[in-house]
Length: 302
Ligand SMILES: [Fe+2]
Picture (tube, rainbow, N blue to C red):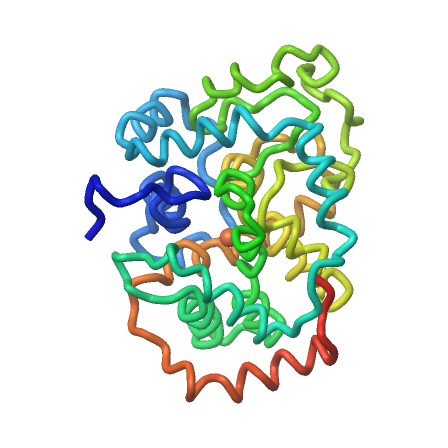
């Protein structure tokens, strides 16, 4: 139990990264049937009043997390992080090793479920497996959050998790806590605040810079190894303004929009598989080691 006297998390205001995901679950509650319309985005006509309710109900730590995220994720910050991380010169490790590394994120245990990061990943993968999806889909579920090891390199929470959004163009009003963008220097830069900003109509998401976090980092680590559908799931699973709210469609190609169906198919496994039974790591490990070997025969550069 956390008390007032305990020091705050050095990486940010959240007690643990799942606080952000818990907020997403209140904003996007599980449909009555989890099988209901996995390919449907939420009503793009959903209006600001609803966002204001989520904002009013958010914990102070979540509010502070979004404030830091929205004020600090500038176009220049994203470019700097890409220069820093995309050379992948920090470590060489296999997927299971990376899972164990992520598991050392000790201040990140979720008191609601008491599951470790590794158990969370296995839980997501096991639910996908139970639903009879292909092996690459199961593997994608297993690895999708490994980019959170950014926290172990000392990155602030707001630079690891959070709903991602394009930088370099105007902020969609579907983004929660939109008012915090006022403190972002980009909001006073005319180049970045038109509808298209630095981008061209229909240029494709691959050319669009999203706010920096665990999605883009992991995508770059695994991009040569998984089918494109899995890569979209990894790269855009936190891009809620795009895949749930339907914002920024003018930056996408027909292929992006088609691939977003896979991102939406993945989303329920990301958000709603927690709180189920604790996976038996020892028993499951041989299956997953074999699955990892199938797609990642050699260690990866991180
Ligand atoms: Fe994630």
